[in-house]
Structure formats: C-alpha cells, structure tokens
Amino acid sequence: MTQADKHFIETCKRIIKEGYSSEGTGVRTRWEDGKEANYISLIGVTNVYDVGKEFPMITLRNNSQTVKRAIDEILWIWQKKSNKVQDLNSHIWDQWAGEDGTIGKAYGYQMAKKYQFKTKEGIQEMDQVDFVLYLLQKDPASRRILTNIFVHEDLKDMNLEPCAYSTQWLVKGGKLHLILNQRSQDMLAANGWNTMQYAALLCMFAQVAGLEVGTLTHNIGDCHIYDRHIPLVEKLIAAEPMEVCPKLVIHNPTKNFYEFQVEDFEIVDYDYNKEIKLGKIPVAI
Image 1 (cartoon, rainbow, N blue to C red):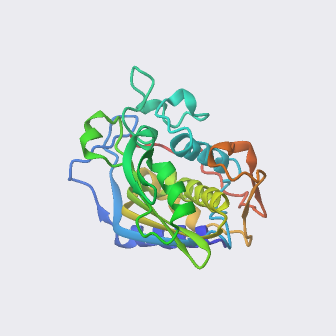
Image 2 (image 1 turned 135 degrees about the vertical axis):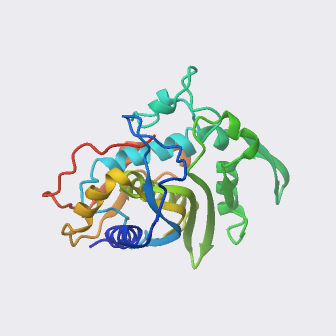
C-alpha cells in the first residue's frame, strides 16, 4: 500500500473507534435534504508523507483524474491568486460563489494581498507567495517562511473560511519540506485531495528553488468523518490497496512558478482498486 493508503486507513479506523460525536452540539453543516450533517472526529491529527520518495495517492479508489483537478485548484489559489469561480476549471466552489462570482475575501484573494516585508535589500512590497519564493532563493535557512490566509479582519467577507489556512516551508539537508496546517478535514471528500495538491505545490516550489523534494507534514485540527460517509469509509478501509509507488512527473523544466500549467503534470506508476464503486458521495455544506 502507499503512504497515503496507510495514513488514510489508520486515521479512519481511529476516528471510528475513538472519535467524538457532534450530535447535540448544534453543527452548522447540513445535507441537501436539510438534515444536520453530524460527524465523529479526532482532535489534532498529524500525518507525514515523504513526497520525494512517493507521491501521496490513495489506491483504495480511483484518483487518476482527481489529481489534475486538485492541482488546478492549488494553482487557482497560489498562482492565479483568484477568488473568481470562473477562473477555476472544476465546479467545486460554485456553491460558495456570491452574486459577484467570487468566494469573497478568501483563499486566492488573501494570496494576492501585498504586504511590506523585511528583506536583505530592505523593505519590499510583495504578496505572500512571492515572499516565500524570495526567501527560498535568498534566505533558505530562514525559519520564518510562512503563509497565513485565516485573516480575522476579513473573515466576515469570506463566503467560507479557509480550511487549509497556513503553511511553513523549511529547507533541511538540501530538501524542501512543507508543513500544512488545516483547521478542519472531511476525510472522505477532501483528505486525498488536499494531500495531493499540496504535495504537488511542494514539488513545484522545490523545482523553482533548485532543491530536492522532502516531506509534507499535514496537521489537522478537527479530523472527521460525516455520519452518511461512515458506510463508504468502512467499505474503503476494508478494500485491498495496490502495491505501487506513484510519482509526479513535471513536464516543464521552468524555474518560474507562474509558468506551470495543469497539463505539465503526469502521474506514473499508479494503479487503484477497480472493484470499489462508491457512487455519488453526499457532500455536507
């Protein structure tokens, strides 16, 4: 099994066995029929993926096409720095779009905001993405290479507060490592999605900075399985994983982060359990 399979199976088993129930707590989330979308959850889950060794993809179900949509979203946030749903090729954000066609001051909007940063050349104005890229090139030993998009003054203007809200980038032993902090994680619908897209972002930044790819450490505050997802998760974790070692190949040698396109990425040495059919997964909103 892959690293992603192992972490998914172990985390889901722990949630089902040890998790806290949200019933009776007045949850915000609802199913399409209006009923409360309750869940069971763990507090403070950390999973580490050696992305340089293996790209984190679950083989318990088919992620061969999902990975491209996940990378498209991470480019929408970090490269396009957009909050307009029309700039995204998938429709995963349509339900959160306002009358202006944006998701408010969330995600890409925050990445596009410019700040005054201290640099070796003096104070420079740039956004968070460009500051990370600057530090990776100019000051890779820094322990202050961070981003944060959970900006309290703008929360009232966000159609959905960010789930994955901060990153820290560390260069150790010639490798680039990424720590991703996430306040809330829907294990069935989003766990594989988030790990794949941030692992791809790690690979992009490593290439741009001339570094080897290191680890992705994924810290999750509230890690949960929704009530209507439990039978589907139990079906997945009982399935037979594949003995493969997926790799991400980037068919673009660029050192400019803003030149990457979704078409540049290819997954090799991946396979999945073709007997598992989950059907349409209900989504809590």
